[in-house]
Image (cartoon, rainbow, N blue to C red; front, side):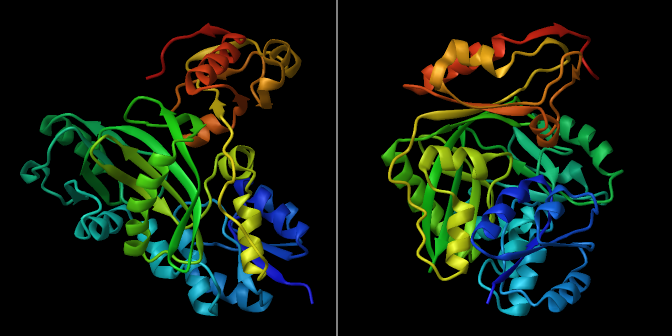
Length: 396
């Protein structure tokens, strides 16, 4: 009998997982509140339902009678998947684990209590008295719920906090104010089975300046000592967050003395990382391997070899594209060092300030291979230099 799986959320980032599930003979039902969601047309069946409404989703899932949920990259409503897992006794992340991962304040409180997030943080809303808040600076003020770089403030003083609060208090939501950590930013992709963390890939990132902190490049990390250090720390984190039999994606800041976890979630990474970059770097497709787990097949999340590659996004700001190179032009210069070319920029298009992930990811990306991190940076900078961009006035 054909197995049936559901995908909660059917945006562009869900397409890869839907395809992989269908390749393994699974009948896929995708649920999304947007009837135009791109993933719906790739599923065997699409259901338009508000995925923030737990009871409505439960009713639809009961009609479908699936065998399991299949995790995809999603933000705040990841908790809907956890709720369905608990309600129907499916394998995968629990409701509690997904709720904690989408609530930055509770996430901080749990890890801080366990000694795994050693910074100060406090809750801020329109009723808060920020005059009495005492926290070391620099600090970051960001929404309690959701993901991405929306409404993030990087603050150097109490005066800047008071100024930012004038904006925040007009918004009908909670914020978290936390001490800023210093170091280089990384991410991990992997899974947790029987309580044990398995890291598939550790990625070092280049990010835009604060407050946006939007990743514009990722490198496949090969340092085994750093893997061991991260694995030891993150094993404690997944235990504290009660992750089990699930995928994991986490953002970290690492310095010589400590590892700081920015956020974590029991789901795959988005932005063409889990579906394109991680498989190319490790020869492990974590979506495919997790589907094997759900089907009771043999699976593997540990890379036998890590390739020295970089994914780079087009972070041009406040320019008009006068010339966009074709793939052949880039290949002429890089040869087989160009692994993937996916550029959606059109000549004559205006590219404004990078303000969040959605804004930059729609432009596309490319992947190059090289001998070292510095070699990769040189190659990707050369690629960007092949664009002819006309500078325009800076956006407010």
